[in-house]
Length: 148
Ligand code: DQA
Picture (cartoon, rainbow, N blue to C red):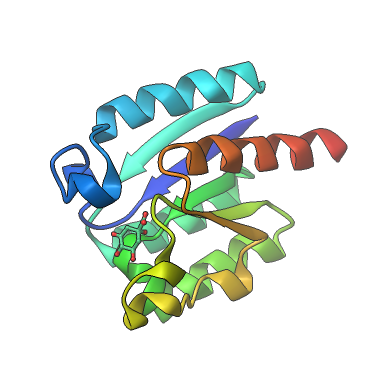
C-alpha cells in the first residue's frame, strides 16, 4: 500500500528553519525516516514537498485516482487554503485516510494558527510531536488500511 506524505510551503527549509520550533531534522532526513517507518508498517511512503498550492491540489487528485492514503502537513496552507481543503475532501470522501500532521502544536502558537481549514475534512489530526507526528500519522494510516 502506498501512502503519500505531502509537505507544504517552507518545509524544504527544515533543519535550519526556526529550529527551536521545528527541530534540526532536515526534510531529506525526515523523508528517510518516513520511508523506514512506512516499511516497518507495510506501507510504501512517497514523500513530496511543494510551496505551490496548485501543485498540492494536483497531488490530492492523484491520490484519489491512485487510491493512496495521505499524510499531509499543509504548513501555512492549513490556515487559509480552501482550495487545498476541497481537494482533501475528495480524498476522504473516496474512503481514503487523510491524516493532517504538524510538527508543532498550532493551538499553542499565534492566533492565526489556531484555525485549520483542513481539519474538518481530515480523518484526524496529529500535532505537536515533532517528526514523531509523521510516525504516528503513518501508524494511523496503517491501522485503517489493515482493518479494511
Ligand atoms: C506547521 C505549522 C504551521 O502553522 C506552519 O505554517 C508551518 C508548519 C507545523 O508542522 O508545525 O509551516 O504545519
